[in-house]
Amino acid sequence: MSTEPQHISPRVNSALFPKYQNKIVRLTCKVLAVHGDRATVLASDGGELHVQMSRDHNMGETPYVELIGTVLDPTTLKLLTCLDMKELDMTVVDQAINLMHDPRFAGRFWGAS
Image 1: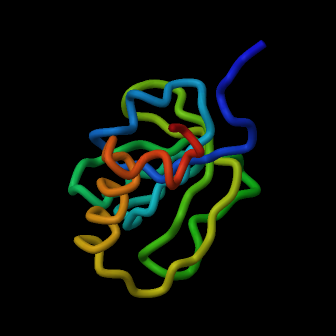
Image 2: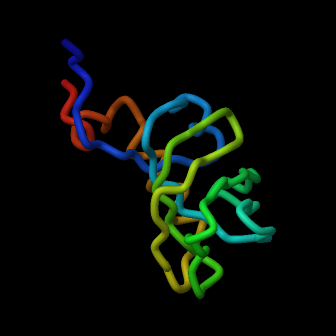
């Protein structure tokens, strides 16, 4: 039996992204380009990632979105859903993500001791 918490979708940036292969994550990002069922986004730490989506999905109406999806490989997210985020300070978003993953604070977010 797995001791990994169920139904957790951690927020990640491009540096943390590869550590979550085959897991569901949240990626707050800026949409750079959309081409059919693929998109290129800029993560909070400035890294570019690719998004694979179905034809039914759109990337929202605002430049900033939070994507929820499965990490397919170190640079590709398979989109499950997309939330519009209006305007964001991506520096603050990235600082929050780094704090969430800092070992000193991770237990507060993920329930680990």
